[in-house]
Length: 97
Image (cartoon, rainbow, N blue to C red; front, side, top):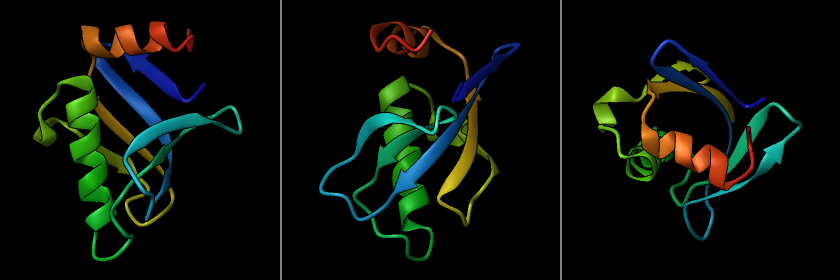
């Protein structure tokens, strides 16, 4: 599974695709990562900044609460943020349980 919930923290394994036409969640990639398209290019951390902004807006968490656990310089990355009802609802709405 591409996410892990431990205590009150969510860890998301992400396959990032920079230079997309818009920011959006896509399909589950190889059963262990969620593919996310990001508008920003992978230059000087722009795609990571845009990814943090997109996740913060999508799950209603503060940008400062989103932490990179691994993969800051890779297309496959793991980010962590506080678990909330918005994330739980997103999991259920998309059938990822």
